[in-house]
Amino acid sequence: MIHHLGITVLDFDVSKAFYDRAMAPLGASLLYMVPQEYTGGAKVGGYGRDRPVFWLHAGKDKPKDHQHVAFTARSRAEVDAFHAAARTMAGRACARTIIRTIMAPSSSIPTATMSRRSAMLRSKMR
Image: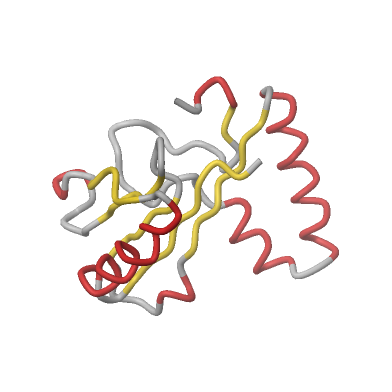
């Protein structure tokens, strides 16, 4: 259900050293560094076993304010239903926080492609 998640860290090199050691017993390692020409100069790296699923993104703001979670879906209909349910529930509960968290683009990394919704189709996973 969870496709990947990411956090913003203030000191990428210190965080990388921590996660290098912490992930090793789980059989995970840093698998990919996004070229900095695609990130506006920020360091961005992904950890995992077979594919990157836990991402670190260097940032200047408070890390707790910038997290990213992406979910998988089996069809476009599931993606649309997910967003409809999120909008409905967000209006009743913690609207501002939930909307900002759920409805944000699926990637904080600038790319040449358009941003997509957070739920990703399973067929696009690899």
